Amino acid sequence: MERKHTGIDYTLLFLLFLLMCVSLVAIYSGAGQYFSDDPTYFVVRQLIWYGIGAVVIVAVMLVDFDLFRNFSIPVYAIGMVLLLAVEFFGVERNGAQRWIFGIQPSEFMKIFLILALAHLLYKLTKDKQKRTFKEDMVVLGKILLVSLPPFFLILKQPDLGTALVIGSVIATMLLMSGIRWRILLSLVGMAIVGVAFLVYMHEAHFEFFSEYLIEPHQLDRIYGWLDPDSDTSGIGYQLNQAILGIGSGQLFGAGFMEGMQTQSDVIPEIHTDFVFTVIGEEFGFLGAMVLLVIYFLLFYRMIMISLTCNNLYGSYLVAGVVGLLVFQVFQNIAMTIGLMPITGLALPFISYGGSALLTNMMAVGIVLNVHYRTKNYMFTSEDTFS
Image 1: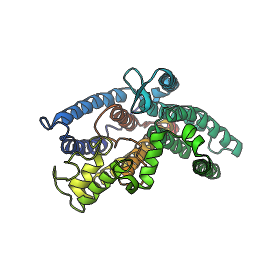
Image 2 (image 1 turned 30 degrees about the vertical axis):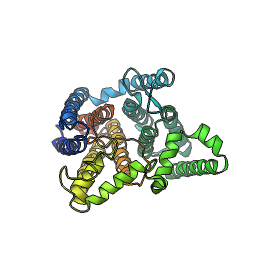
Image 3 (image 1 turned 30 degrees about the horizontal axis):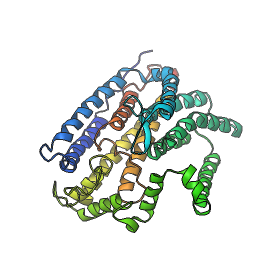
Image 4 (image 1 turned 90 degrees about the vertical axis):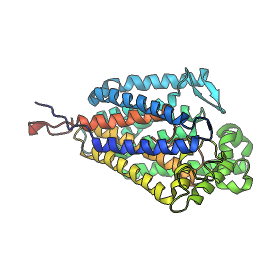
C-alpha cells in the first residue's frame, strides 16, 4: 500500500492571507488612537502574532492527523485539569476568573474538545452504518458526557462567549454523529424550555435569578442589547456607538482612517472585539460584504474538505473546526450590529492577537493537515473510511 499526499491547500492559505491583510488595515486605523505617536504599535505586534501562528500551523501539520487520536484523551484531560485549576487558583480580570499561569485554558479547550469528540465519534460510528434508537441514545449520552463538563466549567468562570462557542462545537458534532433528527429536535426543544425557564425566573424570582443564575455584568449586557437606547451613556453605550459607526459608513464608507466614530476614541476595544466597526464605517456596506465573501469562501473550502475527505476521523476534525469558526464570526458581527448580546468574542483572524488568534491558527493547521494527508490507496479494497 502506497500512501499519497493531496498537497498543501493554497486556496485556504490565500483566503487566510486576505483576512490577515484586512486585519492589519483595520487595526492600523482603529488602534492608532491608542498610540498616536506610534500608530504601527498594534500592527507590528499583530504581525508577531501572525508569525507565531504560522509556526503553530506548521507544527500542527508536521504530525499526521491520524496520530491525534492517540493523544486526544490526554490533552482533553489536561484541559479539564487546567479549567479546574482556574476555578480554584485562577486570576480574576474584569470580573471573570479565566486565567492561570498567564494563559486562558478555555481558549485551548476548544481545540482539545474537537480532538476528543472527533475521536469519540470515530470509535462509535466507524463500524456502524445504521443504528437503533437505543444506540443513538448511547452515542448522545457519551457525547454529552464528554462535552458538558468543560461547557459548565467555562460558563461558571463566567465566560458566556467561549461557552457558546463550545456549544456550537457540540452542536456541529451532534449533527455529524448521524443521530436521528427527532432526538436532535428534542434537544432543541429542551433548550427552548431552558431559556423560557430563565425568563420566568427573571420575572418571578429576580433576586434568586440575579444571585445564582447570572452575573450582574452579563445581565447588564442583555439589558443593553434589548434596549440600548435606555442608557446610551451606560450599558447601551458601546453598542450604540458601534451601530452609529457602521450605519454612517453607508454604501461605500467614509474612507480609510476617515471614520467619525473609529477615529474619535468613542468605541472601547475597537481593535479587538469591535474591529468590525472599523470595516463597516470606513469601507461601508461593500467593504463589509467583501469580508463576508472571504469568510464564506474560507468556510466553503473547509466544508468541501470535510465532505470529500475519505478518512472519517479527519472529516470529523474539519467539521468541528468549521463549527468553531462559523459561530465566532456570526456572534462577533451580530453583536456589533445589535442582533446578539455583547459577549467579548474576537472576530477570527481579524481582531488583534492573543490566545484566541493562536487557537484559530491551530484550527486552520488541523484543516490543512487533513487536506494534506487525505488518504488515497493504490488498492481499491482499502478505498474506504479508515
